[in-house]
Amino acid sequence: MRLLNKVAIITGAGSGIGRAAAILFAAEGASVVVVDIAVDAGKDTVSQITAQGGSALFVPTDLRCAEQVERLVQQAITRYGKIDILYNNAGINLKATVTDTSEQDWDRVMEVNVKGVYLTCRFVIPEMMRNGGGCIINTASAAAIVGLRGLAAYTASKAAVLGLTRNIALDYADYNIRANALCPGVTATDMTLRIIESQPDPLKARERYDRGRPLGRMADPDEIARAALFLASEESSFMTGAPLVVDGGYTAE
Ligand SMILES: NC(=O)c1ccc[n+]([C@@H]2O[C@H](COP(=O)([O-])OP(=O)(O)OC[C@H]3O[C@@H](n4cnc5c(N)ncnc54)[C@H](O)[C@@H]3O)[C@@H](O)[C@H]2O)c1
Image 1 (spheres, rainbow, N blue to C red):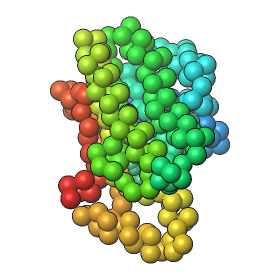
Image 2: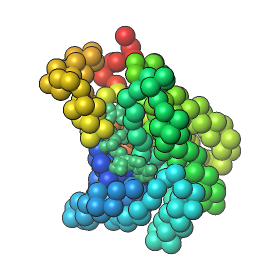
Image 3: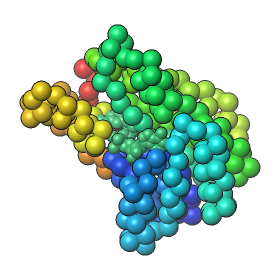
């Protein structure tokens, strides 16, 4: 029970890594505020948590919208009284080089992946300061450490998340707020499966994804969720402003 009596907001918790983390954090004793734009998916995560005896609240939210994020934070406080952990996990991908990226697509990726993180931090940090501290996990990517061909806007957005995380760590260290960036490598979630299925030969693409990592496979969402748990818990108490890379050795090459 590493998160006993803690309250955690997890964004993008209706799917993939976010859902795995929501279920894991709840099993470790946290009350979880499940955030997603996808209503059925968010409700389903809450049902899975309550079925195993945990406590969770779903707040449908489009993270690009300041009013909705402010309302989300108010609802979390009304229900649970405080926020200890903010796990910014929601994100979208875009397979395109810079010359193939429309202005609209560029804005969409930046709005979800970067502005969404800015907005949740903007409204949650004052609550953490009131509460005597807190812990923020922002999802960057291996793409924040190295370039990835054909992922221009995505790579730029994840590098921005890493920079923002360092700044938050510096600006709020005096308030006992830690902020770290989680940098997953390729993980077997809907996001990855959508890219694989869009390739001319999905089977070959899957093999390429597996073989592309020294460990010879993609991550399971639970493996990334466990790293997030480490960052959310006291086990990482002297860690702030740092990237935690969980990529099967991809960026070591
Ligand atoms: N899957 C990978 O290989 C991989 C690798 C590195 C980093 N990441 C990062 O990990 C995070 C989770 O990825 P995943 O693979 O679990 O993705 P996913 O697509 O399975 O889940 C993302 C969730 O975010 C939600 N979401 C999207 N836009 C939103 C918005 N505007 N407001 C609220 N919710 C929104 C979606 O509805 C979805 O439930 C993302 O930030 C992603 O960039 C993933």
